[in-house]
Length: 293
Image (cartoon, rainbow, N blue to C red):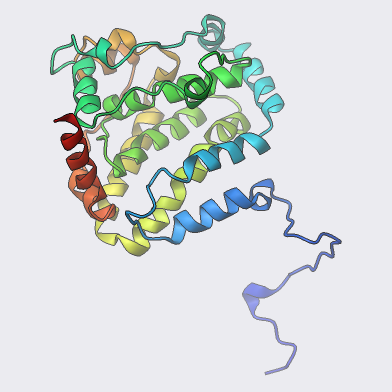
């Protein structure tokens, strides 16, 4: 074999000289050290009690906020409003939820409000309607994208509830794929759909690799969430533009009909999530039960 032989898959490499003293590429995501570290670590690590599942998320969110093109995304949203009156109305009304956990206590056990209340109280959770409001109660959205971020966070738990996912670790997958598929189905501009899905894809997709390489027995459960989320996103009306408070006295079936949410399969993966989290799922429930006593 000749000394200068180059394997087929390695042919075509171009060396591009640079004067930079640090890693640099054509991708702003690869260039950002927090995002680069997050994707590497969350793709390859095992789950452990020493590193909470959500610990790295605030840093990731801030990194994504730093490098996204807010001006461009707001321009695309404004352009879509010209042909989608329901989207224009969504931004014009700028409705913000203010309900508390106690507000849900009055609803029956089989209603959306009652089920949500049971989830919150059994886990000893309070409703967090937006981390920026939590840090600064006077914060208000200044742009369409600010408001989009706010409402997406405020309705996340209700995507879980109505999308058929449980409130377990693997259940986080359904809402993400619901939204991704829904955005690419609803918006005429795939660039906009991609921009609105970027943060969640960076957050969630590394967990798929982690599942396969470390917890393969739970992959069928993860796969069910992916399939369910994609089906709901593709088939449903744009439920993400609607208020959820009217759904609280309704059953889940009634609420889905009210919102135009279709194709839902109830997906219970609590047991698999306990395996995937190496017992952290069950430990959280025990801790919450002790705190409630």
